[in-house]
Image (cartoon, rainbow, N blue to C red; front, top):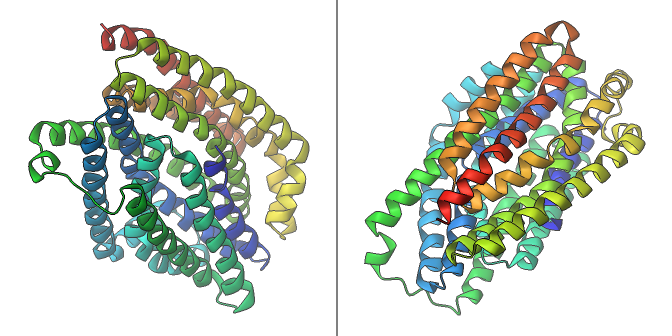
Amino acid sequence: MLANLTTPFLGIVATAVIGRLGEPALLGGVAIASIIFDCMFWLFGFLRMGTVAFTAQAVGARDRTEVQAVLIRAVLIAAAVGIVLIILQAPLSTFMLGLMGGSDAVTNAARLYFSVRLWSAPFVLANYVVLGWLIGQARTGIALALQIVINVVNMVTTAGLVLGLGWGIAGAAFAAVIAEATGLVVGAVVIWRILDGRIDIPRRTLFDRTKLLHMLAINRDIMIRTAALIGAFLFFTAQGARAGDDVLAANAVLNNFILIGSFFLDGLANAAEQLCGRSLGGRDRKNFEQAVRLVVRWGFAFGATVTIIFALGGASLIDVMTASPQVREVARDFMWLAALAPVCGVMAYSFDGIYIGATWARDMRNLMLASLAIYFSSWAALLHFGNAGLWIALLIFFLARGLLQAWRYPALVRSTFA
């Protein structure tokens, strides 16, 4: 949980530093580009989620060779995907920024940020694998330390390059590249020490056909599920952009409320991935169900707490993240809706972790697609409420994801442990 809590500070620092320049177009540009990167990298989140699940299951089965094999397979995929993204830089930039529908000033700022930060792709994706592998073995203290290294380097470098050297929006992008590269170097050293300086995996085991096909099938379903989730958030941002620069910037500021709450709850989801995966690998239904109960109960406790904190201190946080009077005013109008996101998302995040740990990827994919349909239907019904209707539809989406997965859960447990 602490490891995940450090992640939102990346977006908060970039938003706050650019926000201090007092130009809504620059803040909007960072918002659009950051969300594009979050979503684009998030699309390959199976590199972390799948690695957690497969590693935990191998730990539960006490298969040390497979623990190593999972790491190497995932790193090879991460490297290949990262290189392809860099090669496709120009068409990706044109396509993604065109979809967002921002003003010319916002789009130009976002394009500059995008062209620099994309070079971090191989490092980001490899770090997903490293973190997933550590979490899958319940080495969360090391994962926390690695996240802190990445985030501290990013925050310090962002402030130095943007405010100190006056590099503007490009400085924030360069800071992200430097931070991710540093994190990967540190992570590689940590892994080498954990493995005592040797990796002993027979080639035949590493490229085992059955295990590779199973991994690809699970990752495919996780990727489709993630694409649907990305579509929901891209749609949210695009609708804000079409409402004007001030609404876009205000939603960008409030999006940090969602990020803080989601990464907070995602810590519990990560615990569920590891505990449920290990229990499944060891065929221990009792521990599996106990982990589920604990994650859901603590999720509601933490979700309610974060919502109360945002309701009481949200106005002050808005003032820290932007110096623009008009953006502050718009953000305060919708703050109460953003504050509800953590408590509305408890079931969604909790069951995401449970489903991933158990590798129930196909069901998770199908239920996500159903939730997306509910989201778009809710937005259409609330269209005349403007930006408030957009926020309410997003909250309905969170609730639908959690409730549908909770409804399907009992049948999956029975079939898995039959």
